[in-house]
Image (cartoon, rainbow, N blue to C red; front, top):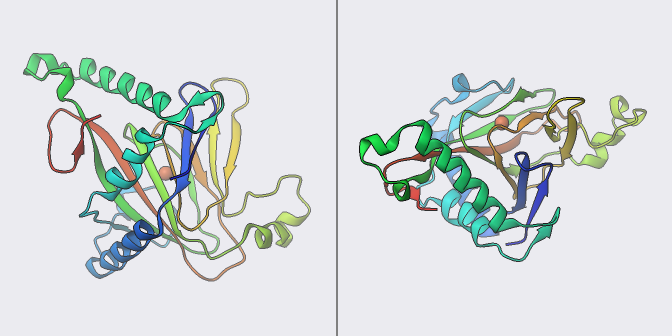
Length: 237
Ligand SMILES: [Fe+2]
């Protein structure tokens, strides 16, 4: 799996990559199951979009095919850091903070028994003109993957609202906003079918509307928390 680390600063960064065709097919199948089960998730989210549904991951592929791949990636360089050691060190630091903050030693939990768990997963169905306002996630890490992108950025850039502006690649984009103090800086990510990003949940982001398709944009999202117990869906890191 080819992965890249985009490093804004030591606390604000994201990893990007592509799901394998098999994993994309698996999640597309899970999305069909989610439609049949129709368990609402929208009431827990801020997105001004048509629908959000609970998504299941019975094979733990978010952990096994995405997260584990990130930690196994040794050879990608971007922003002057090795991806896996940087992400591992960041995770270790956040887990240690969690251990101290929750006073887990008082409960007999050793710091080696902390695990990272994919605690929630959902699918978003976004239509023309809909958007997801600036927000962060109440977790340690967040994962987003796109399974259907019904527009091209070329068409969006040629839309009459975008054509004469001084900034392209905004419509339909995922926009990270980073920087402490001063002027926050935007970074636009063009969604691509099968593409994904993994980032600290505290990293602010926005999803902008698209204008040039009447079809759905479909994305899946999940949150990761540190937990002091080990279950089938946890990963020791
Ligand atoms: Fe989000």
